[in-house]
Image (cartoon, rainbow, N blue to C red):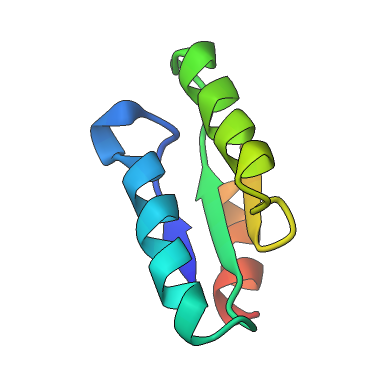
Length: 79
């Protein structure tokens, strides 16, 4: 599952992660990839996302990929 958003509370990344957890109960092979920019974000939000992943044991099933260049996005979309 791929989500491409800015890492911002506006895009409710935390809710995407929580919803993914429900989907993963049905299929444990799922992996969530979140690609996002960090420019202009609240660093506390990014840290809270990382903390949530760690405390809920999701760090192996959710990848946060930050600050990908536009010309590299196609590689992630095709994967």
